[in-house]
Image (cartoon, rainbow, N blue to C red):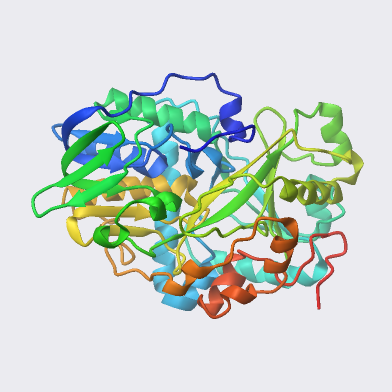
Length: 479
């Protein structure tokens, strides 16, 4: 079990503690067992019961519902997978458009769930400004805007001059950009708890604090062992995402090297007064996403805090190591970044910092389909963009299990043979200190990954910063 310490996800700290569903005990039977109590696992269980109410569905969660990325994320409900330019490079424009269409449907599906079940998710859709943080990145921003328009769909993207950007968010760091209205936000912990309530109401049996410590797949059934009991099922769904590598028997399950965990870190301020917002220059209700050697993402929470994160602070652990989930030295640098964006508020210090793993796939797409046999289905790998995507992946997983032919189950990227990470990735050195992190991310790609990974994956997905130092004030580059 993972110790929260003092840095569990902030979204849970502002909620009352709830009693967990009982851990699995004794020997039980189910038609389908879903392993993983995040958005994907909950959506799979919910849809199975909605589509086939007679099916016995049990969900196992190693910790509590929403413990993983589903309860730690920034709450962005947006139609994004990885970077669409990367997907176009790999698969062509037509297939990339199909991926975008799926991602856009996933956002609408989240909205439908919230409405249908009256979920208290604090959902709002103010959009976001995407802005360059230096003039030299403006061309990149314009190219991104043009490409997003080419993807099709209802995209009312509005180009903005620097003056227009700063009329909304008056930061000295911001230059020209565009406004994307198709970005919404949820409070992820509240949302996860709401989905749990829906699942229980539909008859899903949920066992928390029940890690799967053994999975045995036979010709006629699957047996799952936990510390307190055993489940026998016809089929299982692995909705374990970044924690998939910790499952016992990866080779037998057929899921080895489908994804790799990368750690991302977030922070949040105390509640800001109206006066502080006026002083900051952040007048708009929308969020902010930046383009530059470092990508920052930040938004105003429903209770008037600034939540932010930065994609340069990824940490890639050894395969068997899934912690620590919070690295305090990152926060010092991230706090300095916020001061540079809003110097009138400086020093603004976070009241809470947290982090955790997200599932990264080498092809930038979720891995969704049967593995080894039709008794094991994998739904994992949203590359840090799974708030909306995981929900639709869950519905698609349920449709696959029931043999339904739908627009989602027949999509080209579902049930395909996905790319896998090369075996040498398992030999990565760990990086746990600021000095090591600085060394790892000083080059693009990191020197120890240069020959292990597809070269194109880093620049478009921005998993690392292109030759940047921790300071973004002048965007200095290292030699």
